[in-house]
Image 1 (spheres, rainbow, N blue to C red):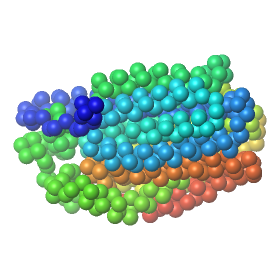
Image 2 (tube, rainbow, N blue to C red; image 1 turned 90 degrees about the vertical axis):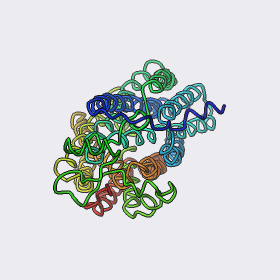
Image 3 (cartoon, rainbow, N blue to C red; image 1 turned 30 degrees about the horizontal axis):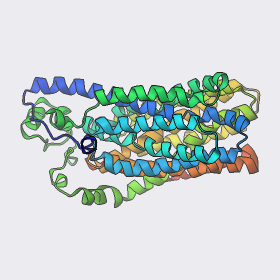
Image 4 (cartoon, one colour; image 1 turned 120 degrees about the vertical axis):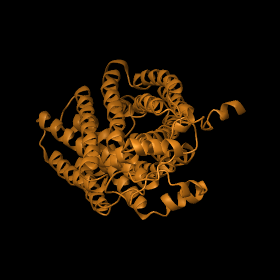
Length: 463
């Protein structure tokens, strides 16, 4: 048992490689490997979390469970997921992601198997809650890896590429689960993704590594130095005591030597819990996630009931929502790096205004125009995933790579507390006030998120 827990202790730094060409070659190889491995791994986490929306309509019919109770599954799952994401974020900043991430995926797969074998309301609720806890082990190791292998000046673009794992994973499982639910029953929506996840967990344990230092490489700021002279200086010292680039002399690179000497608890207080912008971002994320998950979880049901669209087609349209989000998040990351000097707030504000407009137009569309329904879903997905992605990047910028998993875990906690509203809350509102009440809720959340992001226009990281 002691050997098992020892697996999660970060490995010590290896002897530093001093040959410049070898450093560059190894960095290129390992950055690519870390990026595609975490991309695949986190995308497959969605296979055993977002498989339930397409099963919900069938479960309602077969098991006779009301929308409010079905929404309760989503709410309980998301609540525990939010708590887990925060607490595992604290662990994730100091754990070896090579084994931490695959363990979470493996346990989540097992919960899906148990869920598919269950039929009692309370048993299913408990199992899905446990699944929420194990799902919270997915993002923190990714945050640790991405923060250590990609520097702040490239996070908007590189993290945007990784972030598309959300949309790819969600889109694939929505399409897959739609066919599985229709032709093989709702249980197959849980069994098949579980088997895939077990295989990917093994893949992650073989592919992932911890920090560059554990492989004998210098901090990423050395590798991404603006000039060869600064690269060689960093290689000799292990740090770069120079600006990121010309004209930015007031902004120093990570890591800050004096901050590295601060005990971890004090570091968290300074960069996370005492930072007012972190809290503003947390509350903004709460409302962003309400919108995101209402569409992800309930769009198939809405399209089936109110627009007369088949479940299979509705699954494909909701998958389109995710794919559009992929494009939107990539565009958002590129815009922040290219035009806003790594300030994420302006792009979040613009995207939220356009999200509000798109939701209102989708609400007012009459039935019988599936093409227009699809277009509006694509627009909403495109715009809402920009802020959803940039929240994590903006938080990592502020908290620095030493506390990125904790800080993003805190914003994630607020995001998944939104499950009270997007799960049970939306189900209750629709049961009592119809879908018009549901869309009024969406509009209100869009307005509040827009106002909160307006306070982050000039936020930029400490590094």
